[in-house]
Length: 506
Image (cartoon, rainbow, N blue to C red; front, top):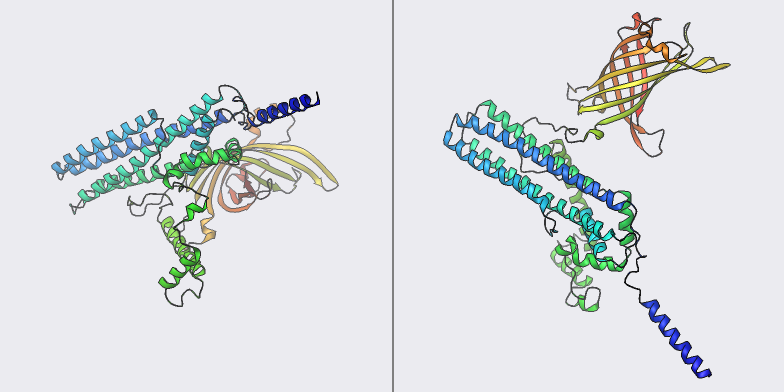
């Protein structure tokens, strides 16, 4: 009897151990997909894809029209050369437009082209989750949604590949145009002008593509949370070693991580010995690694200087060096920015001493500016005036008025070419304002137009970088304004002729 009980306990234990070691196929509690990840990823990826398609198509049309204008002007000089260029031009742009549109129909993954780390991570993560049905939590249709996200990411990669083809093809068209035009010593000014516009259009297109890639490499909170979870899983690491783009470029050697993989490789001592023999005698000081580190540091410093020179010429990192820019061309950094990134929000304040009519007051204004270009900002604002009382013994907060503002800022030119940091931060400011300078008792009082004073302002604004007073560690743009009111004598009662304001960006 005791023997049977012992045998039964042993059988139950073995079954329990086996059941514990083998998870059922529908066990899905290892990975929790963040709620809203699929929708967030779809919005970002499809949004980038749509913008890339729309901007690429628009720039192709602009470049094609600009090239046609160049060819029409050339036809007045050499009709045969113009006819040949026009034939190649139409064929090139039609092929590029067709390839751009067809890229949206391809959902297979490419293992070539420019390497974008975040795009590779997204493809690897979605591919792994699509196949790992037994370790994904949430609803039953999660696999189909992840599969749809994967197709969207692959479609975006195909679109980026076509964009690279466009950049290469347009670069070749530009060289062909320059080679043809170089045969004629006295070209009409219209040809040079259109060629300059053509080059500028391609430059801004390259900048736009670069900004889209930077946006793609900036993951949101949900995506970062998912990637941080997956990177801790050995199965995911193994999946990336086989299926990522980086793995395709640099495949993992056979028997990686085992002693067999080291067979035939040189040791560190062998490498140091080879360096001592090949490097100049006495240059290493007995430590070739330190010598190479010093040489690498010097090379990085020289590379930094080259990048600074390229930046002065308007060629940014990642831009194309195939396109020669027109003389005196200075890129406008705001031209490729979306609307929301061209809006600037700021607060500014103005305090006035007490007089026979008003107590000590402070005007606080919320201003919204639009960067029309690098040198011009236009905007609107609303202000409110607070009264603080007559003195420290009689403090009383009251509403002493309100106002509506409009303004325009122009960047002050460095006429003497001094490259002064002070001059570079100065702006000319002009504006018009309506101010209600009465104690606010009810909203009905605003309807009386005669109670509003007009102001016409002009002066200087100094802009500088400062720490945000609202968020520690954040850098914002501060400003100090000195303005003259040309209508100060017409105000009732008269307002100060000079207006002093300070403010900062939000």
